[in-house]
Each structure stands twice: as structure tokens, then as C-alpha cells.
Image 1 (tube, helix red, strand yellow):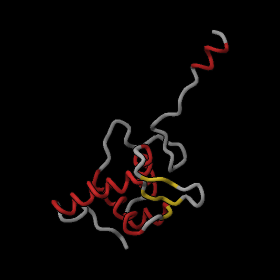
Image 2 (image 1 turned 90 degrees about the horizontal axis):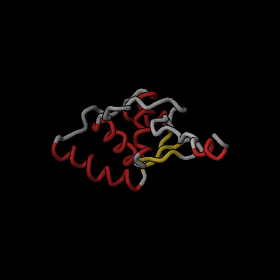
Image 3 (image 1 turned 30 degrees about the vertical axis):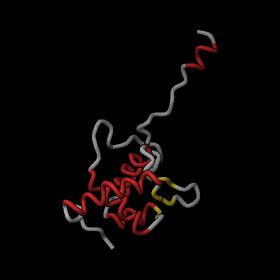
Length: 119
């Protein structure tokens, strides 16, 4: 194999790389995340604006490592972005659209998010 062939065989980064928690694989590999949890994260970000991950974990009632897995899933779908400076999590335009569709649907037909938020 020549050097040209070797360079074409470079591996792409895994799509399951855990961006938010430092490179571990996502817990959702082959599974689907809980939409109520996604809705809680989006709802908190919509209500409070950008938050650091610790504050977001507290506001959603999620363990930090579990929140990180959800954030990875949401980053892959461009629902949230994490700032380079300070690591603040914020909704993207796609995340706002998910809020409009998913969270409002849950509030309308279910009445509340599955788990109460911690204040």
C-alpha cells in the first residue's frame, strides 16, 4: 500500500463520541433517549437562557454524567451549542423549533413534564 492509499484510509471521528463529557461514547448507542428528559433540558434553556452544565444539571434534576450524554445527543442534532468560553449551553434555532413542537405538545396533551424541576 502506498502513502496515498494510507492517507485515504484515515478514520473519521466516531459520531458517538461524547463531546460534552470529554470523549466517552454516548449511552444512546443503538437506543433512543427519553423525550421527556430532552423536553426538560430544552424547557430549562428556553426559560433561563444559557447555563453552565452544572447549573443545567441542577435545574433539570439530572446527574451531571447523564446530562452530558443527553447534551451529546442534542449537539449531534444541533439542538444545543456549547460555548468555547465558559462551556455555557444554549439553544440553537433548531432547539427552539424543538421547543415549539415537542415541549408545547407535551404541555398541551400531557399537562406537564414527567419529572418536576428542581429550583
